[in-house]
Length: 254
Ligand code: ZN
Image (cartoon, rainbow, N blue to C red):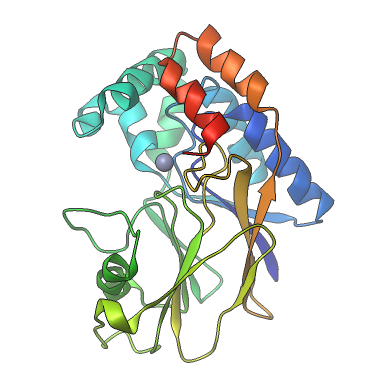
């Protein structure tokens, strides 16, 4: 398989997930990787999990997926995230919570691609937002490409060496924020951390659902944005009694 769709941070937003899956079908991409946070925040956690299980060849577990079956893992969540994850825990069936529990934390696809939700090295902050955070994260990247989610912001970080023994400073790492339709060539002799952005709760001021396409023959990573019915997703969030800010932010992409 040479072209792989990469989705992440769906967060129970079924309207966004269905729109992204439709676009993936239109692009004739048969293989999908999910980088976790299937649930949490949004009103359709079980429905999103069922779709991910049916359509994705691989999925890893995100921090919200873990907190859904183990509320103790939500200790660091803010108030709205905590309210939403308690609602998610009560809403999902026990067999669905068991499916989340069984998701791996890390997985490898093909020989050169590693998948993890947040960051390949544990640390005080596991959000790879900038070159400094990426420099630290590359210590855990032992293949050409590491796919991550978690920040809800599409981006690629490039390290100047393929040697896992090499350590980097922030200044060594190139950062590429990617907009809709933008593609980056993943050069030989380097390593990359690629983030497809978020399907269900984008935070880069573009409210459209985001996903990535990794081509492992030409070695490119491309970002795609998809319009979806934000009004319907907001209505469902309110109807579920979830915190109103979780609906408001969908229209802002923030
Ligand atoms: Zn997330």
